[in-house]
Length: 115
Length: 409
Image (tube, rainbow over all chains, first blue to last red; front, side):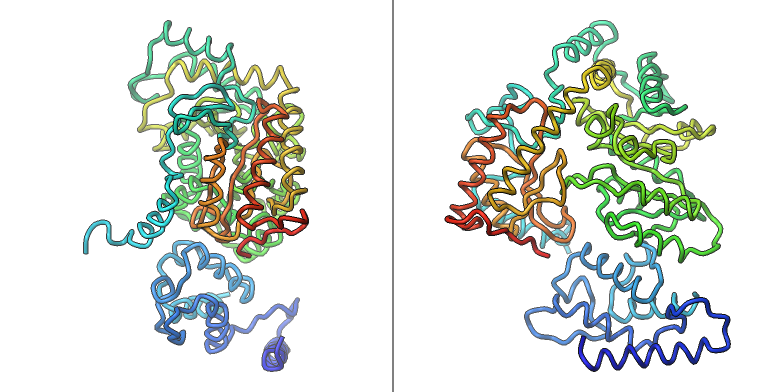
């Protein structure tokens, strides 16, 4: 884990503790909805190995199934990792409708907020 | 845009496959000689990829039963059970399968695919939740497309992953149905069923297990993983097929639920397709009798499994995680798998080739399935031929037997 990641993790933990201070929080599970930028960064990190040969950067507008060399099963496997990371479940029919990186990030942030 | 343009990627991949000179998806068995031999490309070929786990396709008593049934009741039923009625043999078969599991109810389907498709999609409704293993068979995924329920995947054979997903559902109303398989068809691995059942109990979820590849193979009486793991009573729905160990075609689902039979008038894959012909029903009934009466077939199957698995492992091949009637051999990539498959066929051995997207985690596999009908010589020959090709293709080290082959992951 790089220093930047460790720093990010510490920051996250600290924020949670502040947020959960007044709560009768039972666990140290990440309760605060993750920041959208943080989710975006994580998705891009996970998609990096599938980046197209033309070297185009992965952005919010990247169409996952089209612009990257990733098959639909691998997308669903990546989604399972993201689900566990942010403690949300994204139903399969919702996954099927997600096209861009932006849409995936929005879905995770929205589900986290509803938790 | 043309109708087939969206398949462009697949067409390219398929073209690559065919450059090897043979099309693994259109193999023709010119003549089938026995459960373990057929004539392919004019040559007598050893079959190590047919799911014929007990070798019952040529069992004389099963064949006689089928022939008798044709003489007595004709070649087909020409309609569905709900429209044309059931033959008494359909009902007798259902009773025998229910008794085999000690369950109250059984429904027989025309294929195993239709059993999964129909039962799984119909059991749950719009307010329910279906939780499926990520490596589930296509029939389970297709059921998910037909259902109104919310579908969530959990990581393959990972009870903790299932637990997290059931926990996240919290106190949302609606039934939870968890779908598992006794033996997974690509790598031959079994579900950690006891742990899964414990998780399901914790969240009050129903368990549906597909014993397609484990019927006959697992459990003291051959009932499958549910019996081997000692949780038969905790498996609310058990689905299976007649097309593997029982050597014919068809599917079933058993359950103790008092209202189970309502599925007969709600499950479309049961209602709107012709029922099994008398010959199939008769041979399946006989094959089930054999499964009950001849446990030595199970012993012989697992002896052969051990011989093939351990033999290939000793040569340095990377295999599925455990002994199973399906032995999956990892190969580095799709073209290597196709090339290896073709070389095997040229050497007179037929196995299956499995490549993405039909495989978990994008792996490329040679998929062998073992039969009780294989002789030890046939198993040893298979190992020898595979090792030779493995060395020739540079997958196995030509001097040491220890270099393992990595999958894509």
